[in-house]
Length: 314
Image (tube, rainbow, N blue to C red):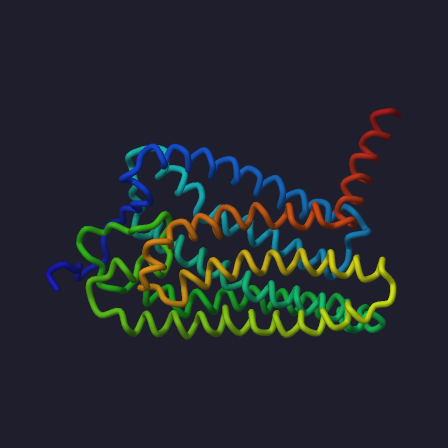
């Protein structure tokens, strides 16, 4: 018990790869580039969905929410990560760590629920196309987004307070890039069985249940797509749904590996790389996946630049 603090610590040390300075320099450049792409890509989707009337549909309404979540999600941790990667100072205050944990966990939980909502939207679009406008009316879309944000608040309030009250070891060295639950649980010197059980239960509710519902939705979607007679209609449905499935796969696989068993050897050794993946890489790939594989977004970009070109010529 002597190794643990009886009061809240002044701050923490986010180790990252502090024992490999050359790797940290490489990661600084890597994270900086990806963060800039994330900002540009997601802001572009938000602006296009707002400006172009062709994108005023439930699908792009939810995609806008995903882009906004990704912007907030990355901004809650990447600036601090870049500071720690750039120089010898790896510290973060206790309040800063707590704020990062609350925001990070809340937005991550919200994204899990949002991906489930987006799967439901695709299910209705493909399996109930004639009733799509009636089912996915604006009021329902707004209610679903409200549930997404409330779920995020509920998820972080369920676990963040108990995590920050853990008896942390005196060295306060967090073996990760950000203050997230698994890393802080590994830092504790006291009994963490309750916290581990709690995160497993919450992980099952907010990770596995939405993932199961997404897979069920896409099982029905696959049947409906195969039944489409038109080759063009089948290709369009496949392009739209496959983009969402790629996003789901990238996000869920990396997060589940870290959060379901926070003290597992894989979570501890590979956790830092997975943290980089779902905090840096995935939010960058999301807008690229949705724009490069989506004719509607490409068309919106062409119309936007086409108008700019016409305005210049006039």
